Image 1 (tube, rainbow, N blue to C red):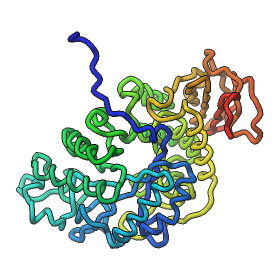
Image 2 (cartoon, rainbow, N blue to C red):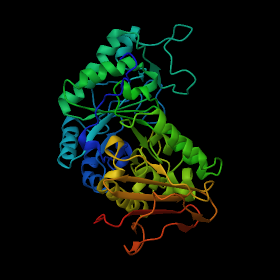
Image 3 (cartoon, rainbow, N blue to C red):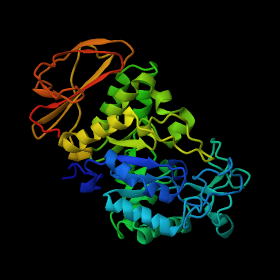
Image 4 (tube, helix red, strand yellow):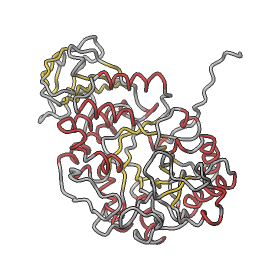
Length: 438
């Protein structure tokens, strides 16, 4: 009995999350008004994409001391229990939450537990809650240029109690559904256990960690970032890494992580957009293939606001810089992929869906191919992740089936998929012909 396997990853994912897609909103830039009401007016658009989780970047007042730019970073929090008047007030925030819930959207707030603004009232009321440098002074996070914030010290029990009570406040008072936790790995894991236990006494919450660590799923998080997935695909898109870099990621994902753990796959987010460039700058001609893999591979896909409109500029981080909204083929691509994801159980998230099974092919240095299969329905995905055309054959029998080519002009049945000609950076997606797509 002493050698019986023990499962430390016991968190159950909510049923509603089985086919969920997450959508990130930068309130300041989302609408011309830059307010909660500006988001509320477009919630039907977000739900229409197929998103299920609405992630709002920090909504709190922003510090003025050592502020960056004219308006400052939303991650320099001046008051954890207040709303930034730039965005609205409690009434407009409640309208946003209520409307989102009416449309079937869950709402998670971006929370900044690792540090605060220099002029947060806690600095004077509880200076003992802050970390110090070798001189005994308050410090920003070491080695980063985050000069507009100072770090907390989570060895202080009082800080933990305050932070948990503050997070509970927004759940109790506004009925939010969870949190995206900024720089979660800079906060001790045992705090996340304490937080999860406290919040779940109010209602079951959904927690996303901005970090890539298996044990955060043991300690309370539903989902973590798949940073290494994004980095691998980015390097491949710029021809600085082989396709095997992705195979290594998926091997790690399957063997080292519990299947119950959601990992967030993304081609853009506020950090990537602001500091690394637009989705087009980051992925170039590989962009559409990257989006396909983010949605149809294992993981929960993220849409960064404006991606569906082409994301044609780097949004300013410290100033007003509204998104240029327009209809764009990327939006149509996301809608089609998410419709497929939600309709085919094999493509669902975590244990609700199916593992990716590699389909060996004759051009492994260029082509990634896999099947996901559940309830006798298969999805066969082929991506040419190179700048050269590929004439590729497939081996073994798993992929063989009668399919519908999802992106073909006519939904005709295809019986032969043992050889495909692929143009550079292209993709093909097939679903079992016996499955009704519409």
